[in-house]
Length: 323
Image (tube, rainbow, N blue to C red):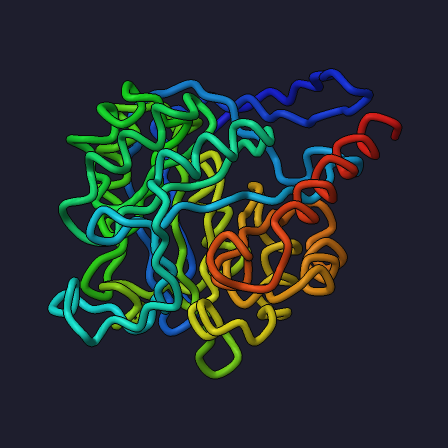
């Protein structure tokens, strides 16, 4: 059995955030798989941590989370579905944009514009130095992902990342490795962990993809599974596999699913072309779903104004303060 106490914390700016403080006592956890009824029963070690609900507050506003994708040491925008294990650095990778500016330069700009919670993603090996320079240019302002495991997660936090983003260590080869997730949470606090759930629609339902989006798992993105995972992390980063990098508009069904089902704040990535798409994410996400913009942004060779997006973000902040 598990027991928990709910605590209401009143935070600054006139907002009220709901925080659930849970104490777990060797209880079993399970998640539902829509393709087959299977359960993971695991004895969990005692731990005490805060779990922040995505219902946080009705006054929470949607946030823009900037990105720095690093491939071969350079900032690039790549169509994620064109990647596979053999194609890092090869002609099979579809590159939308390659910047002449360093990852560190982007990080400093995000810091100057007070855009916290963005992510630095290492696309393949050999990007560690560039990623380290970026997060150190904006200490505690950026999350870092790409090759994160239980052995190096603490290192990246010590180097200045606010969170580590975990993908292939937990979801790999079409499988979900709960034991790896538990290992990570023994080394770092779940409040410093973001789980990357790259989601693809199959027969009307969304499933997590692995191996650089080339393999679909049987782990469905739904209320039961998001609730199960929420004990282990602070946020979710969700890539819409079907639309990311293609600048064809957002996956509306996925944004709605995340808003309605996730107990934690989600950052949505995929297909945003303009401010109309941003406002659509805001509407469908109801303040529970943040977003990132890639290839469409003028910082990455697109037509969407970064400065306009920053102004919008600051207006959102003012609106929250007034409310």
